[in-house]
Amino acid sequence: MALFSTERKKHSLRRCPWPALAAGDELYGAYHDREWGVPMHNDRTIYEFLILEIFQAGLSWRTVLYKREHFRKAFAGFDYTKVSRFTRKDVARLLKDAGIVRNRAKIEAAITNARRFLEVQKEFGSFARYMWSWVDGKPIVHRWRTEKDYPAYTREAVAWAKDLKKRGFVFLGPTVVYAHMQATGMVNDHTVDCFRRLECAAPKSSVVLK
Image (cartoon, rainbow, N blue to C red; front, side, top):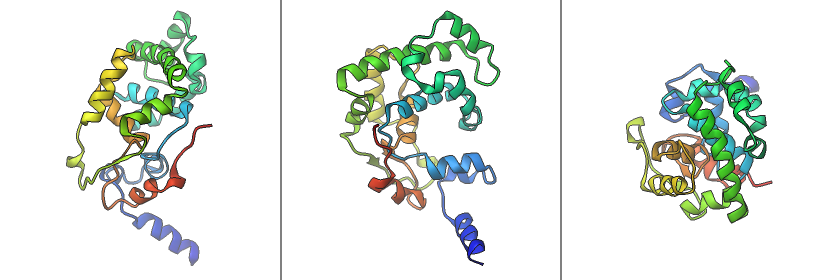
């Protein structure tokens, strides 16, 4: 009886509108319930999300999510130091990999950005420290109620995207940057009635730098 009550409670929780539209998709739902909007401070995880957001541009997030483990294998476990050393041979290899999105511009962007990522680390001590400076070190909390409330980007995303471009990062315009900010908890964009809104605001939800 207790197990039944727990399962019933789990399925009756209010969620953001976008995973609700994909009801029955366990992977998509789990991503919302466990990862999306959780404050990230681990550089390797941050780089992972940057790669995935770049490849997601123009596609659905579900498409990239279902290829995530393939991306992990293709891009050296999202080890940005290793990816920064990728050569033309690696680009050719990745273009033949059916497990990922085979787009030359995006593949080359992932490599270029890994190199720029290391430069930022050297300057700031960690990419996370640089990244979080754009929101004064804590999540911006919005009060969205419906899917229509979500903007394509915000002024913070525009400012950060401009600085990233100046530093030599590519394929990271305001829309992609804002999606990254949402995913890594720089903004808490869970709707006001979503059960994850308060959970992502709790300090224990943060993923800390290691």
